[in-house]
Length: 234
Image (cartoon, rainbow, N blue to C red; front, side, top):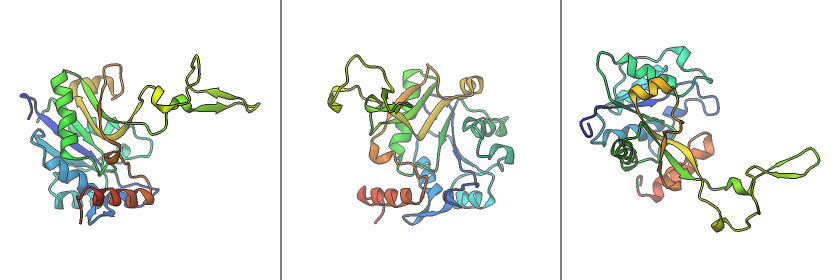
């Protein structure tokens, strides 16, 4: 609980990964991928309850073995490739009724480098600022001000219209992109908007070294290297 508000954290980990089969329970530095997120979430002093939402019994068993609750099996229709990310979150909130929460935090297992400081920092930014939603972002490594579309005649057309083209990155505005690590939202607001990205959404900046997303096998190697560099594994 934080500032008198009950906070639910849900880890969405479906079983149907096609790029890397069994991705969410694949070993990363001695722990299943999902366990890195469970471990940091359990360290939070702000989260009242931590659950894992999955359609896969293997993932649910691993989650329980690492200290997360698995109060339900996610319906198959909410575990498809085209399922919007907000739908399993709203399902989790509804599935726990009559127990209610003021805020829900979505933590994706594919962001294993995020720490409890990032989780609590995003929660505090949301509640302290009186915002309905805060999501974690990181500075983009490539500026869209340097990006172009290639027209049929091979003409370069800038993605962002500019009066003059800048040649130095230092002269450009900083730009950010969601990194998928932490989503914090007011439960009632999220049920109404069914989207995290609205004009009311605010960003919580995270460093690049904790913003790596696990999509393919190479990402496992990169994350393990970064975890070792940070001293989080031997």
